[in-house]
Amino acid sequence: MMPPDLRSIWIAQDPQSLRLLELARKVAQTPSTVLIRGESGTGKELLAQILHQSGPQADQPWVKIDCASLPTELLESELFGYEKGAFTGADRAKPGRLQLAAHGTLVLDEIAALSLGLQAKLLRIIEEKSFERLGGHHVQHIHARIVALTNLDLEQAVAQHNFREDLYYRLNVVPIQIPPLRQRRADLEPLIRHFLERLGEIHRRPDLRLADEALRALRSYSYPGNVRELRNLLERALIHSDGPVLQLTDFPPHITSETGAHPTERSLEEVEREHIAAVLHRLRGHKSDAARVLGISRKTLLDKRKRYALD
Figure 1 (tube, rainbow, N blue to C red):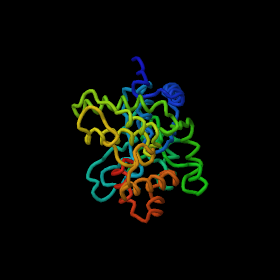
Figure 2: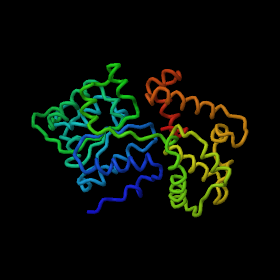
Figure 3: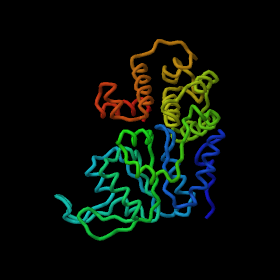
Figure 4: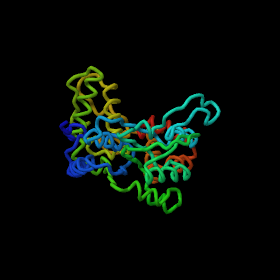
């Protein structure tokens, strides 16, 4: 099977992005463990999919688990699976993600959220290429490539004893760092064209384009939410617009206030968004620490990140 053209999947024109795709093309042909790093919204999961689809395991399962979204006990059962009677309510055996990934790819999103106990178990799995279901004694062998994703500074987590140093080195066999959108500006306009075309198809609004003033504002914006934020901004503007040309006034005020494209009074909502974005950036995306600094619950922070297109 011919490998896909990675540039048709990952919109790239900036030299940094082109080098990233060349590295992905090489890594895809190996079974090596990969650690993909980058800020929220840069496309870590998409790059993991590219690695899978352009390698020899493309016809095998692609399985993902979000390590931050589940409590430790549930995360452990999701990873390993369990035998019938392993715990109250386990009325049947269930395979875990490690088994379901078979000879494909297992993606561990937000790997830094793993408890130290689960980190130790994951280390043993990587080293021994085998595991046992909860409540079982039959050894299951793992053949899938492991791809870990994180937006945090793992070296700092190791120094603070929040992440195992030995696991870090096991995961960091092939490190891939995705630059934030603000550092690969040549990708911006190709991404805008791509998203306008896709959004036009979804919303049945063909021939979408930007007014010159709106394009200048988007060129100057810093994108704390990266590529995901860009798409959300364009979709929001599309919804607010009255025709095929998206005007500067169709975009939220924080775009114009940051770039100086259109003087305006800033709303409390926009001030809050920028403050949350700045705190998350300073704390390298660590949600619990950011929530503590902001004086809100972690759940409230997650809700606001989604509302402000920072997730």
